[in-house]
Length: 270
Image (cartoon, rainbow, N blue to C red):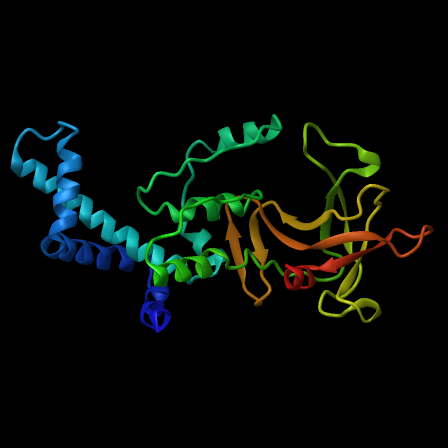
């Protein structure tokens, strides 16, 4: 029932969501007295507002932005990732992330609850794998809604035979540097929708080596116009990727054809 009520929010543009969020925030300012009093006390402690008029104007603005953030979150928990990424028009200091990746350093992101903080993990996750830790909300109905939204699949890149894919592993136990695996790149060698040998697997043509069995297989694109599984195309400003499956070895020692257990089969196991 909750999803049916909130579903229309996912059909609105970001500008429309912001307009409704402002209205919702104004209602909170008038009706949510307890929240208004708590926000006022928190802002008052900063000492930035010497008189009550400027203080209350700041409280109202804060609750308006809270309203925008809430409606944004309800919308993005229901939208596919490729649509959400079109909302991101710029990313400041992304070069720092790239620098840390090049140095084989792990990154811990601390995300303050300011603005549409939900988009940050989605944006980073479209470039690199990420594990998100969060405290579930106290409201059970909201917790289940958030979990469904946060577990939605990533970018559904279109996959066809001859498309490039990469097996990320450790051939002969060799790392690419630090704890990072080697990207061995090849091509899809069978129709993704067809099961090979009556099993939920597909074939790739890739020069893999011992030590790469059990490695993830990724379809990675460097941005620009990218074809999606639903037949549409979306322009991305940065790299995007899709998890294809798990590599399990070659069909025989004399061939470069390898077997990949499909992502759908892995999901069923988990």
